[in-house]
Length: 309
Length: 318
Image (cartoon, rainbow over all chains, first blue to last red; front, side, top):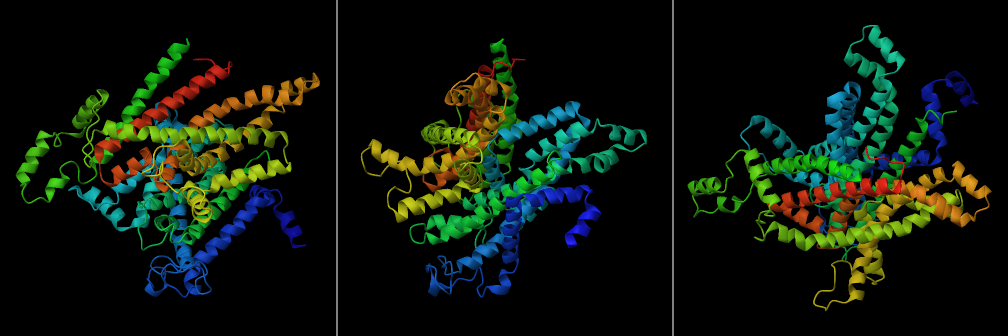
């Protein structure tokens, strides 16, 4: 069998063992397949759907599910299925990029705190603790509102930042969610760095004359990557929920651009007239988050050295 | 010794509260509008008058001076006035806070009532049908945003079945009756409590599984003690201690959930007040709510530490 040769060649390599451990986790594989299906349909919706997600069709307002519109239409006659899939593009993009922002900041903060320790560590971690204890949604709302305005200051830097975030709603939401989502990663990375920096191989790298940045990036970071990857996968789910939450409150990405969150908000406004408009966008959020959570659990098992056989 | 521990924790909380209120204060300065925004487009009021008013109200002073002034007033119970309703902020919050505490407190109790037995049974009958169903449901609960489950509950119970009202705290124009309030409470509490119950079940199951494999449980079983006594008296007591911390750590989740629940079910609580105030740039109200919530979170974390230390004699106050 083909597996035999491949297995023989790689059986002792860490990435192969990790992959094998991951594939043993049935729900994680199930989540992977679901995510693949979702990404695929979201990417190719423009090739398949005959409808435009934003053009109103006033002769077809709020029609219940039918053959032409499998999920019915919304209050402007737009096809719900098409809008849901286009909305998925925005939600997934925001999820992935906000996670990248959060993981980058979190890794940086955590690495510096863990490696240097002492007063720096104390300061950074105090801040992290306190940022974790405060209900993030309130700060998220404040940030979303602050950056939703056109610039009003004379300072060119502020004008530049505000103006670009004001003009690009997706970037704005990514930014707001990203800069408020790094605390968990920072804690994890700090823990790994604290542990690894005292290992002998790091000591020997230092004796050999490696500089601090090199030790941090080349020697410690790769060994701290497992928990970061797990946190990153769960971070995508978190960011998707945050985005839909903000949009649900009307503070995220604004219509006519569809996102799962603002479609749900729309559905709430007309819940008695057209309850079916709520079901699918919400279900997509749920399905995506569920799949990502399963994948995250699978990754956690896969990167756990005690579980690799 | 206990008192010095509590005092020290209380004092360490002060800088946190200062930072959080200052950060919010600073953020609010970045917003356009403010107390004089209403005059800016009024042709009867000249730019000069606005400048004069700005100076009189102290809005042209440096930010730390303004913050200090706010803090001094705040400490004396003067939280400013809402720009939109012209009422004192403290009164605005005082109207809404009980509703939020009512909703969150009740949801917390319901969540614990669901989660504790479910977690215990799930752990003691690991891999049974009940365990599988419970863990699956907990997983679903963990992935379900509260604004979606809330909408689904409205669709099922208010629109299809027509059993329960879809929003508000009581039927308008009707006299207060207990049955009516309970009917209005049902859906909001259900959606908020399932959100947090899912987390508690997962946690308690793991924690129970750890404990029941410990030696002292085996000793108790070998002694011939009744299984019920072992599980509920010996095992659960120890497994439940860390749950106190989890409940405290998850308070932000509860408050965030409450904000959405209040939005969906038109529940007149602090979450909705916050969203409304923030979208209208009503600075003083936003500041007041942030300070109130920071205070609640900090105090409940502190309380959890103290309770934890009382429950677990191994913890020392050092």
